[in-house]
Length: 390
Image (cartoon, rainbow, N blue to C red):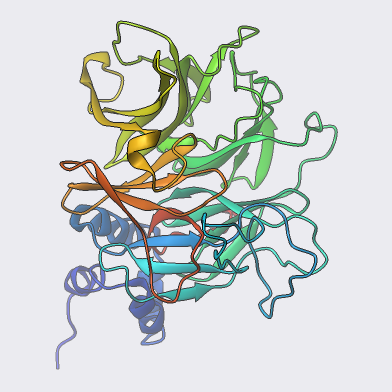
C-alpha cells in the first residue's frame, strides 16, 4: 500500500486532541518528528482557535495560604485556604482540575507544578496563553506549565540584586509575536524594577521602569491581548485608585497607555482588565449618590480605538447577590455569546454565569469539582515549555 503524503497526514493529525497526538508519537519516528515540529504545533493551535475546539477551564481550588492542618495525598498544589460560600459549606481542596469549557464535562485532576509539603505559601495560576499556564509561588518562584502534555519548566529565580524585595509583585504572562517568544513580566506596584523573562533565552533582564503605578494593595495579573500585557494604573505619584489603562508591548518591551471609554463623568476607578472573545475588557466601579455599588464592564471591539468601547454589563451589588461584585473579573464568553462567566476575585471564589439579555446569574456548578475555585480558560496545545536551547 502506498504511503499517505505528508500533507495529508498533517491535515488529519492537526484536528485531533493533544491526548491522541501524544499517543500517536509512538507510531513511528516520522510521526514523532512531525508532531514535535514547531510548524505543526502552530498549525494545531491555529486550528483549535479557528474552530473554538479543545478549549478547557482550569479550576484552581485554593487561593492563598496553606492550612497547616491540611495534608494532601498529591504532590502538587495551589493558592488559598478553604473559603466559605456564604453558607459555611465551601468544600475546597488542594488540587487543580480541568473540564471541557462547553460541556463542563470530562473533569480531570491535574498535577501541580509546586509541591505543598512544608511550604507556607501555595501557588496560583496568573496567566494563560496558547495552552501554557504561568504559575506563581511566593517562595519557590514561577513555572510555565502545559497541563495537556503534563510538562513544566521552572524559571530561574531572581536574586536580591535583580529586583527590590517586596511582599507582592505585579506579574503577567504572554506571547511576543515579533520574537516568537513567551515572556513573563514582574515588577513592583510603583512601576519600578521591571523584569522580563524570555523562554527563548531562559533568562531574566531588566527593562526601563514603567511610567505608571499600580494601585497599592490591588492584586492584578496582566491581561494578555494583541501582543501586550495590560493593567489598570495611575500616573506616577498620582494615586487615584486606577484612573487609566496601560499596556506593555512584549515585542518592543515599551509601555503605552490605552485609550479609555468616553464617559461624561469620572467619579469612578477601573478595577481590572481582562479579555473576552479576544477583545480587551475593563471593569469599573461606581457608587451613586445613594451609596449603591455598581460595576460596569466595557469591551474594546477594535484595539486602540476609543470609539470602539462598548458597555456590556451594568450590575448593582444589590441586584447581583450571587457573589461580591467588588472584585469581579471576566473569565470568558460562552460559545453562543449570550453569557459571560464572571468570578469574584475576593474571598468567595465561586464563578457564576451572567445571562446578558436577562442580566441574571447562576453559580457555576461542576459535579465532582470543589465548591470554591478560581477559573481560567486555556486551549489544549502541544506548545513546548522548554527553552529553545534545551
